[in-house]
Length: 351
Image 1 (cartoon, rainbow, N blue to C red):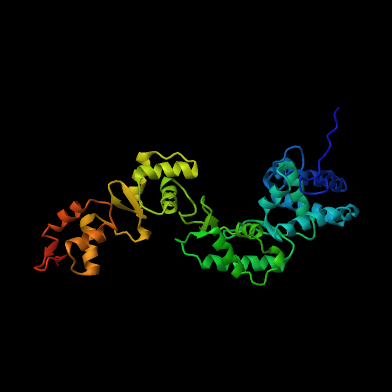
Image 2: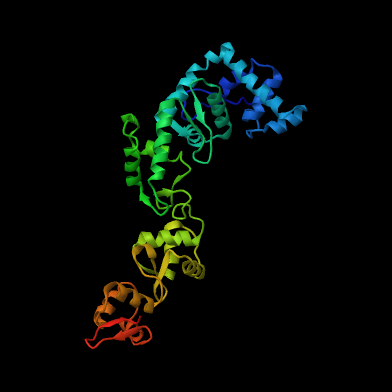
């Protein structure tokens, strides 16, 4: 029979499975079986729930929890526990190299992509005295750290950063990192690099990054893209000027490698109040200052703001708002229900 040779963790110098196997050998069989099932340490890497283990042994889930906790405490008191010190120190070094506090998934994926190996690393994190974790909640992902003061600083900075961002804000990554650094003025210089800062930002569930690498509120449609209209918004915003709906569809496919049917794209642009129709099939973003409505509405808004204007003056200003022919504007000015012409040749709004 061929012998399986265990590899070291991809980013570690120790063999997680060998260490865990040696530790588990010192506890009773049922305790060992419970830990293997709970942490996915056996042949099946799937972690088993308290309920499932309880049904197997015909005991309550609370009793399973007691067995698990007692087994972990027994391992910490065993002589073999001290022999794992080198592994704990190596894991502590890795956490520090990743920023001192890191999301659990990021940490495990950094060390190895092997699911079974990840389970053994996770077990050592739970068992090791240096390691503390922050529970996942509505504000943050589950993460691991060794320095409580550092963890508190990062959490406070993330909350402060979030409060300073509005729902509509989309912030380039470089600017976002600069803002974050201002919240972390007392942080150790060794952590002042973009990779660590982006890793810290990923801890927050309230702050996120869209497919264009811009940061903002994670719940905002500008960040959490759910469909064609959100991709259309990002595409037009990135383009920076009005686009025909056919061009918007092409841009979505080019920028995001996502199928966008022309008709679907047009329908979404019509329904989304972030867009303004500025010409035949041409759409702009309302945030750019474009006035909603038909050409007549734009002319009225121009005259309300500017006061009486000549025909040429009106055409000049309306063409900044709408991609239409000058003749279309002139036709609208002839509607005496809405506009009147004075003796000096200027036009104003009928009250």
